[in-house]
Length: 164
Image 1: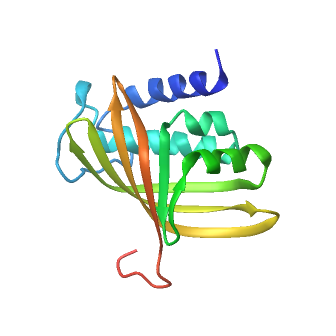
Image 2: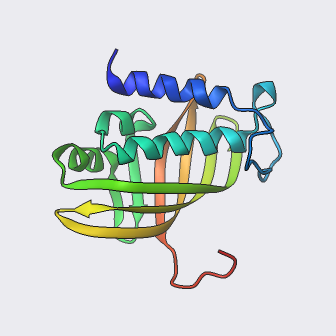
């Protein structure tokens, strides 16, 4: 079994095992729940934590297991194909040594989820170190029993943000 498939399957097994009483859990916007009393907020918190681990492992196949094949980033310079990011990770052009995320909101619309996350990460791009603090709005689509990211919109956090 390819690493990406195995990693995604193990991640989904962990995600499916979470329960609403999980430490640090909090209600999310709509109050909807997945099966077995697992809140959607918990599902996405675990899924994104596992995705972060794939990014820090600098493994493009493991990262891709969490995304749609046509995954894109949107930012200040426009639209950037996820496949270019994955290629950059594969060649070592970009690498991450640290990444943490805090889910702030999850909204479900049928088989589409919008997840708002505060992301902090550190690594190197073309040999130059970077440290980023960003808001990420991710659009996920449900494929069977799996959620996969289709769009990631990144916004840099202002130097001083009230309430953060």
